[in-house]
Amino acid sequence: MSFLESVLQRGIFAVTAEVGPPKGTERSVIEKKCLQLRDYVDAVNITDNQTAIVRLSSFASCLIARECGVEPVMQMVCRDRNRIALQSDFLGACALGIENFLCLTGDHQSMGNHPQAKNVFDIDSVQLLGILNDMKEKKIFQCGETLKGEVKAFLGAGENPFADPIEFRVYRLAKKVSAGARFVQTQAVFDVEMFARFMEEVRKMGLHEKTHILAGVIPVKSPQALRYMQNEVPGLSIPASLLERMEKAPDPREEGVQICVEIIEKLKTIEGVRGVHIMAIAWESIVPEIVQRSNLYPRPRKEVG
Amino acid sequence: MIVGERKPVTEIIDNLKGYRKVLVLACGTCVTVCMSGGEKEAQELASLLRLKGFQAQAQTVERQCEKEFNLQLQTGICACEAVVSLACGIGVQVLADCFPRVPVFPGLNTTFMGAPVEQGIWEERCSGCGECLVHLFGNVCPITRCAKSLLNGPCGGSRGGKCEVKPERDCAWQLIYDRMKSQGKLESLLEVQPPKNWSFSRYGGQRKMIREDVKL
View 1 (cartoon, each protein chain N blue to C red):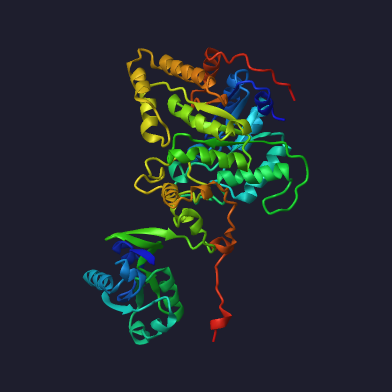
View 2 (tube, rainbow over the protein chains, first blue to last red; view 1 turned 90 degrees about the vertical axis):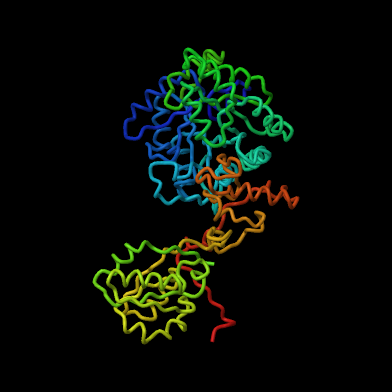
């Protein structure tokens, strides 16, 4: 069982964070971020060419993270690889001891730095979950043939409670859970009330009993950053009151951290939320402070191995 | 229908470098309806080419995608040095098959299989995947109309009914959701759609249909 899974199984409020690999070969970038995060999170998500910008691969970065003593969550997107490549990478990752996988559809290539690329989208995130879950539980490939060896994998999904059609989001989550998602990391929560309403629907369907839900949070450094997210990132709900707070704050960085900590405190009280996923994009160094100020430190001990 | 868009005249002229006597060939079907490769457009292009010093004439073939129609051209074709076909990519190839020694240049970019949604606006509707599943999605094809071809959508980027990839485009999954809701069939969207069999699509290589019952 992965460490992340064991933390969640024990009912400990989990903390994960996101690490984006570099646009190049410098492993020190990943090492530095991982060492900063190591004692403050239970696992680190390694993104898979997020926003369709070519970066050092998630697979390789996961191995570097492990060498730093950090448990990785390998993100896998369906944009660049078909079912053959995805299954193959999954086998490889399992053989090398990666145990957490987050199945995502992936940002469209037009958002990234190779907009002229051909996309794959042979399967979508729900189907990827189903395929990996069958490889784990039934020991079969998508084609039905059997595979050999042990598959220790803790499978997860993303979900955005704030995108349209809003009434359908919880049902989409239900599909991911039925396909095999044992943990879920959500889009960043700024609008806690809206998220609480989503969780109410989640509880009505009993999904919180079937999967571990980690709510996403993003600490913001400036009112400009928050405004950018409001305007440019589809599927984010940012209350006007937060923007006002950031704009009036004498020290926006401190205000951003404080807002993030307050959101985490509120998330802890929502029934069915089993942890937080901190996406401090290009600001990983702030994660330890957020974890400490949210009274989530120290983290449970990892058995080395 | 097949929708095409005329290539920029500069590109057509570039391709015609070294030729003088040019036949501009319209097609009387799809590209006539989408107002890009019909008789009117062929006449216009021929006039433009004449202004640029070509000896250009226009003619129309009812359906360039069927060789019987093209073969009626025999004499006209032989009198020219090159042909600019305003048919779709299918028409261009069938025409070239009929007259393998005549240089044929495409005058259109074949864009998609679609439909006019209002005067002057056409939209893609079908990808020809070879295994139609549109009834499962309220008759809105997610393979064609969702930027990520999600069979278990919507993704997390749908906002106000629009697609995150192109905000002027409708989110296919919002359309699917609305249609299924209006039909009281939302339940069926809860079913996980399995991975699609793409072997019927172009990913299996060029496709061919043989109907023994109608063969001569």
